[in-house]
Image (cartoon, rainbow, N blue to C red; front, side, top):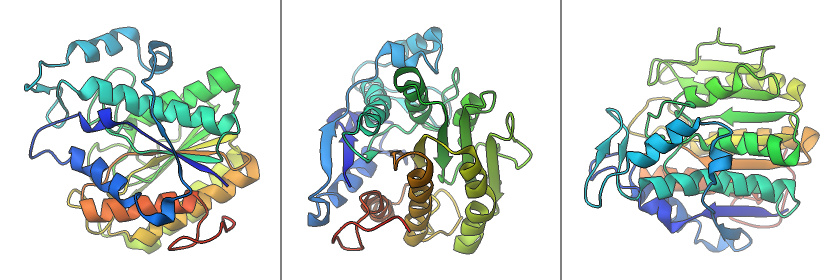
Length: 321
């Protein structure tokens, strides 16, 4: 089994300010964890920049041009909203982040890899087609899903989101289109205040399970195991895309879901099992949130090790059960 890591130094050039939680050190921490010998078998490639054609499958051209036009001069910042800040390097980083997911889709659909992980920033799942926010400029996973459909002819794409914040941007893309599926657990109440269980999309193609603060591992696993995963199985995706946010961890400073690293391993295995059943094992995962550096690095490494189907601490590949 092969797993491809996609990243780019430009993703470190997005500088939202010295006290902003979505800081370059997040990506540095993840990449440092992947320097371990356990990841010697991880294939690696530089993420290309997303093209205008790829962006326009999700975002209107006037939105894309507005984001490019908002780019400030070196050393300055542009406030997009109260949480979302751009520096002179932000657009290049955002284009590489979206391009990484597109390249991951190409790799798994073309048989060059079984699974792929986009170690990128800024994140993307809060960006709707025409509104940025929540640290996000372009919706990386939605762009990847539309690319899979337009270029590879994939009929059913599922996006699964275990970030602690609801990905309202992704849901906006998915909910009117029955060829897409979106499933999310997220803390509620919490930004952005969306993701109610009653939000079901069209033909039940959206599955939201809001979780109360301090829900912990048992409620998280129950939500996925009893509600989202059965619906995903019925949808029978031909490609699985993951919004991999690790800010549900008990150590994260921005939320209080109280998950453990092993919970991210568990949900990754469950998603791999469904991908094995319906999608020939094809999974593309993209980094979203996670703001405690130590547990972000630990959790992302555990997630990637699971995508590689390795035992804890390395070792030979194992099945996703």
